Length: 455
Image 1: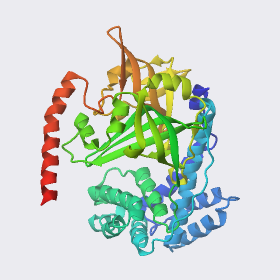
Image 2: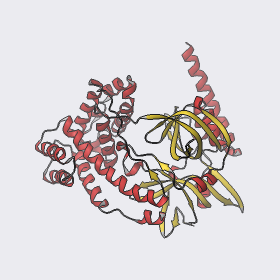
Image 3: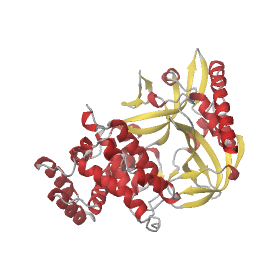
Image 4: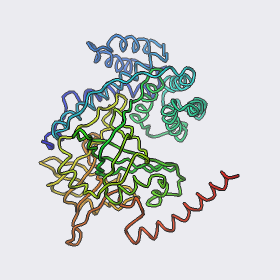
């Protein structure tokens, strides 16, 4: 069943991507310079929405843009149309996958819209409009830095920080590439993704996911580690057994700021404020949660005061017994994108290839580039694996698996490795020695920061 879902190509998939590529091409050259070819590409998008609730607004906005009138409202509709197309691709991939895995997905319930943020968001929209009019090839240092003032204003308001972080990261990418006209290759789809997401996030009535208190036993399957020069984040995937008997697929993430000299296993030290979270990963323990906020998208907002370590559990045993038929949360509209798919799965019974698993006649790529330096998982262990807990992802036009844990045989001995094994410090002697040396730098930096704060 899973192999069939991975093998299938949804109807209209390539045609939908072609529509998106046409819009993205217009953003390269700028909406102020729409020639006949790009006008036809935009009009094809309008035609694709014929018969949908968005038909009238999309046709009107694209007509005005082609005619040379570019307003914030027109751009919001254009970004919404693009998001709807990527959302359709996301659903076309995820629906057969859910069926194959026996996974029930809750329907999306629209949360209440927040009150308007007024001029705080207007500054961000103004910068995004200038980018769209100029196009990526027209971005110079001045335009790339044009959103800084809006970012600072949004960071001061807790309700605006989600948009602020996105605008700040997008601006940083543009500044590092400016002047874009000199680049040999422009990251077309990525920048269009960031732009359209930012346009929607800066709308006054864009809702945030709602939360409800959750109780139950959390069984962690694995952790996805994200390391940035200034941030280290651990996002655990697991199952929440609720008092009512339901088993829900959830995520729980924690993060901390750092400097770029802190990397690899020593980055775990930056998460010292989360001892329960780290111990649950390193010691393979269940966690009893009480009243912990759970969003409608399946994210536990981690609170150490609402988490108590439980008994040891085997993630592979949990995956074999409980992962099939779980209830998955709905995907937020803004996250309905093929690149956002990250579904936990247990894989067994494949034929190993150099960088892939042959599963039921389907070649499933193994994304070893995502293996973190902060854990013991290596390409060699993955190549020797007999079982794998991982995240199914859609990347570069194909399905791939990102390993989170493997059961392998090394020198005729069974070995089990998880990305979170070193959450409390490396267990490998060589890695422990290197981490101890790097950890001294962490302690020094923390002591100096404390001294500055005391002043």
